[in-house]
Image (cartoon, rainbow, N blue to C red; front, side, top):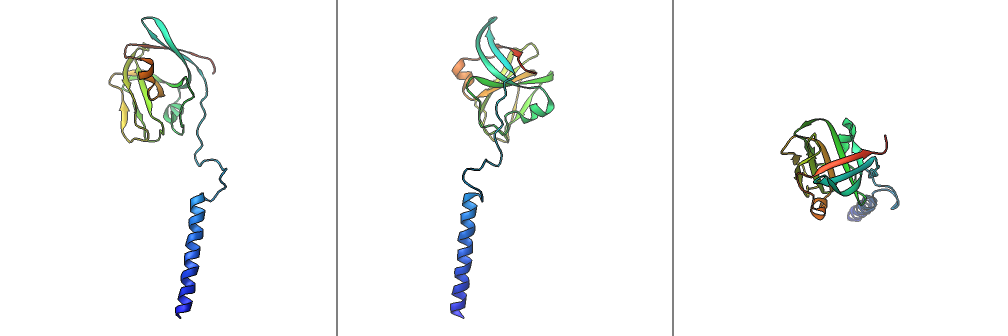
Length: 168
């Protein structure tokens, strides 16, 4: 009977190791796509940052102006191409709240009022955080850019956003 138990133990051990091998590989070929693919940047226009009526920086933007595009935002995105950002356009100027829980990249978030003046900046937001990022002032427009953008370009509250949509 001891021999039979050893045989069963060996069979169970072999099965466990076989399953571990499948689990480590994810059960798919190494060249397969990730379970949640990243959403590619789609250029909708260009945005200028202005100070004292003069532009000092231009970036390409993706525009989120529908409920679904504003809700999705930077979720499922691993980053921005260089020189790009996402502009959120809301129907009304009010306190805006952003949720980072499903956003895997750190962001700088710039809140602008109905006149397009930056009224609040949150730098280096924590990716995948359950905490809300809320504007201190009412905002109608929100620009998300890679973390560090504000510091590296010297963006300040009171600067203005000006943009043009280049695609529908």
